[in-house]
Length: 205
Image (cartoon, rainbow, N blue to C red):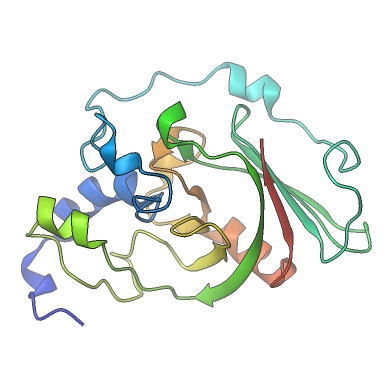
């Protein structure tokens, strides 16, 4: 744990800078080379995104068959365009549809197949070394709680630095607001956390 006194770093300051930063939870700076791009993931565009009217009509249920060969261990489909997460249980009897936050730009968006490799209730968060260099005022460690950018639960994916997690900043859901990860309302990630298991298939399209 960092010796930096987190209590001196106000919750408002931390959440304002970190929510957009970490919906990605420190996205793939090593694995994908995104840190070499001109876009600075620590300083997202200051202008808020306009209301997403088309997302209302695009937010609709889907069937799993076009996307998965089977439902072994259950399946999670994240539709970046409609900003929605779909879940099917292994027996096909449970289907859930949740609004989500998505990456800020195409450069930060990763699509493809991965799996859930770890589940954490009350996740902690630590910025990467590159983040600490750019923002030395950030704490080296954020414990579980209302200041944590990962919300109440997190599903860790096989892609390094990528997670499906909650958020305490509900303004981010349904918007382009992350650096790569997928965010859900805390009440929704709690539901998904109870349904998904280690080994659940995940597809981002």
